[in-house]
Amino acid sequence: MAKTATITYGDKKIELPVIEGTEAEIAIDISSLRAQTGLITLDPAFGNTGSCKSAITYIDGEKGILRYRGIPIEELAKNTRFTEVAWLLIFGRLPKQDELDRFSRQLTMNASLNEAFKHHFEGFPVDAPPMAMLSAMINTLACFHPQFNKIEDEETFEEVSARLISKVRTIAAFIYRRSMGLPYIYPDPKRRYVNNFLHMMFSMPYDEYQCDPDVEAALNLILLLHADHEQNCSTSTVRMVGSSRANLFTSCAAGVCALWGPLHGGANVAVLEMLEEIHKGGLTPQHCLELAKNKESGFKLMGFGHRVYKSFDPRAKILKKAADTVLDKLGVNDPLLDIARRLEELALKDPYFIERKLYPNVDFYSGIIMKAMGIPVNMFTVMFAIGRLPGWIAHWKEQHDDNTSRIARPRQVYIGPTTHDYVPMNKR
Ligand code: CMC
Image (cartoon, rainbow, N blue to C red; front, side, top):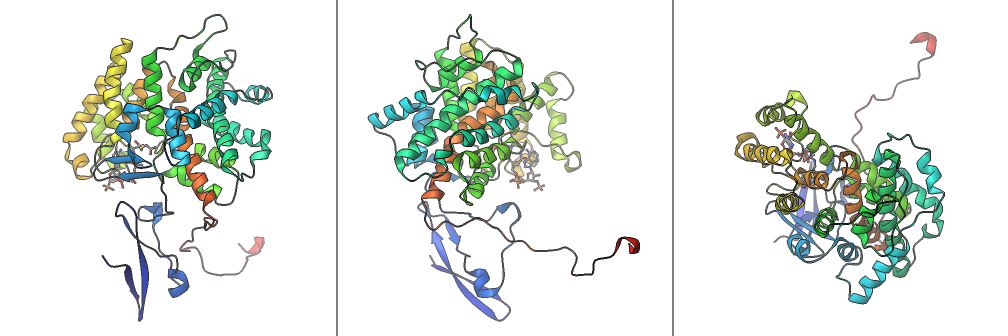
């Protein structure tokens, strides 16, 4: 395979290096293009642009492959849990037993929030959007831990990662309690990560939440499947903000804002709303597909389609199976699951969806499982954020550790007015 690509512009011809990744992905390195020709490239929404080299996650969108640090997602889903996957993503290999024990201890020790956080929560209206509160509270962590503004070594990195991953779970549970007007429940050091989250969400001072092992396993699975997805919108945001050398907390708070949108993490809420609308009779599955196919409607089939996957999203495959198992074990008979199955069946037979290679994505079935666990719909995207946090941290670290990284600063093609004089107010 050629190691250079040739670009011809006018009478100029230049050679650009071709880079090959470990999975034979090929890229033209255009970093010297402007210096050599005065030209830039234009790629709105970055569909053809690699923003970095990364060793964290591999996706083959055509074949429906997803691997964290080389390990297939199906194997991780079968064999491990969220906290081990977090360490794998951040530190690049599976932890040894003593490393995992140390990380678990740090997660336990750092679960509490400074009592002053309660005043911050009280300052929000009860109906404040959970993702707005989450982003604000992660930024608030930067106020309480300025010692982590600079991270010099791996040990400190492990400490700050554990702190963030642990406290985000407490913040998420407190957001829910605040919105319901319920007393805050403190973390219980005897419980594991997911179990402790459910305890803080659902225990009452007079009635301690008993965590069903199947529910705990299913939530572990959901978080693990969301843990990273290479250069998606929120992760790219974290890297963009981090490239200015902004601290980890603030960079991740920006990631939460990006995740909130309905085309990204917010799709899990939009899917449930769409299924509920169909269930209430406001829309039939067929009508829903017709709307999605009509560009004028502005409606999209939520939970379908992906920038990278042009085949089944492997996470959706796992979650579809898990939805059956979890609802069955919990004895929940949710008509929304039948509607989702029907919609999927119709869409996969429809030429519009076939031609565009639109398949169910991770958000299509996750909401149905979370709903069965009692997690309210407006908390779904917060759950996605808890899951995605290790990925954001891993990417921030990869960039931080790369001493060749520079501030991210794209260019543009200016299409505004050319120069003209200022017109005084009385002459306009
Ligand atoms: N419903 C109807 N049409 C769609 C949909 C959809 N859900 N998704 C894509 N299309 C159409 C799109 O309009 C385009 O049509 P045409 O070629 O006629 O102009 C064609 O399919 C190709 O779209 P694309 O270029 O693959 O889409 P994209 O990469 O710009 O956007 C997406 C990807 C995920 C934002 C989009 O598929 C979408 O809006 N899906 C619904 C929202 C959703 O489920 N988001 C969650 C994504 S997975 C989790 C995450 O990353 O957060």
